[in-house]
Amino acid sequence: PLVLGIETSCDETGVGLVRGRTLLFDAIASSVEEHARFGGVVPEVASRAHLEAMVPTIERACREAGVRLADVDAVSVTAGPGLAGALLVGVASAKALALALGVPLYGVNHLAAHVAVDVVEHGPLPEPTLGLLVSGGHSNLLLVPDVTDDIRSLGATVDDAAGEAFDKVARVLGLPFPGGPHIDRVAREGDQVAIDFPRGLTSGRDLQRHRFDYSFSGLKTAVARWVQAREATGQPVPVADVAASFQEAVVDVLTRKAVLACAEHGVDDLLIGGGVAANSRLRALAQERCDAAGIRLRVPRPGLCTDNGAMVAALGAQMVMKGRPESRLDLPADSSQPVEQVRA
Ligand code: ATP
Ligand code: MG
Ligand code: FE
Image 1 (cartoon, rainbow, N blue to C red):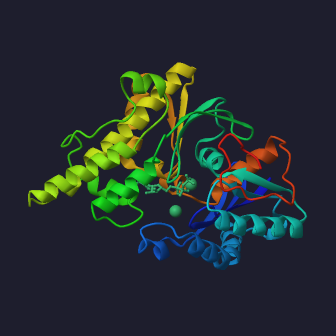
Image 2 (cartoon, rainbow, N blue to C red):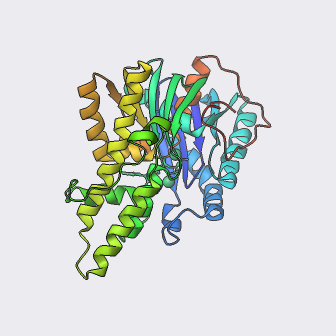
Image 3 (tube, rainbow, N blue to C red):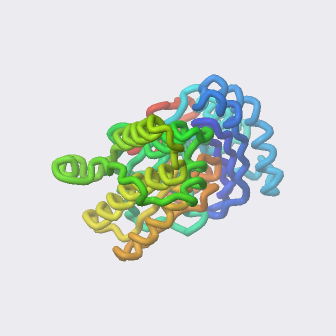
């Protein structure tokens, strides 16, 4: 089936075209530059930008993919979670398109789509797969028996998401928003063992009670305190060393618990998805630890880790191929859709 997928949960207007498991084209328009001066995404600005970008982005996706809208067999759209107003633009557009074309509509979960996108690169997902979902708003360990139907959360962050921690620490270091890619770049020049930052929920009772949970807010505070103390001495802040040591603390905990979850649930395949999965050190350390543990690792290419339309199209196409029920045309956008609810 040829599926057109629409993503508008945050500041990327994404339109992807997928045929079966083949990605034909992934068109993205982003309003990130309009938000940068505010240091975070401004919901009203994002919604308006989606409205303006939607039609041109659909047209560009079709043109570049060499398909006509009339060839599309189904439309899929992110129904949640995300910014309410931003989601509404995508959901309304998808309904209009599905109705006009006379094809089924699939409302899908954004987080499930971050996992499902990997099929366009590495083929069908083993069932079950263990998912490590790390993004701007989420950090979850997921048991994924079937990405179109059955996702179970084994644990999640108890405070900040991993991407949020990257963005906040970047701000402390005077790096632009969104900070993740900048920390990744700057850290390459730094020493990851220069500063021993805390690893949350990794020992003693904390680990017992939060075996597959994460915590990054204590780490963020520790970095801010360290930088303040350094500034108070009048010496320059070693930005690269702080970035590398912070990044190491995050990816150490992420990969350690992911490998532990694979072992305890008897799963041999780990998939990392979400914007933070673009991080070069996370990818390298995960590969190292998976190799050591005999786990097969799958990570989509960086451009498919951050928000895009291809992931929504990829999940929609798998729903069609698995014969999952289509969504109703009065499908609501759900800003807090839980990860377990794969279809809307
Ligand atoms: P969610 O998926 O939870 O709704 P989101 O859609 O806003 O959140 P994504 O686009 O999936 O988030 O990811 C964005 C996050 O990924 C940002 O916090 C950004 O800093 C982070 N990120 C992107 N690239 C990198 C990188 N190379 N290293 C670390 N973090 C990164
Ligand atoms: Mg974004
Ligand atoms: Fe996302």
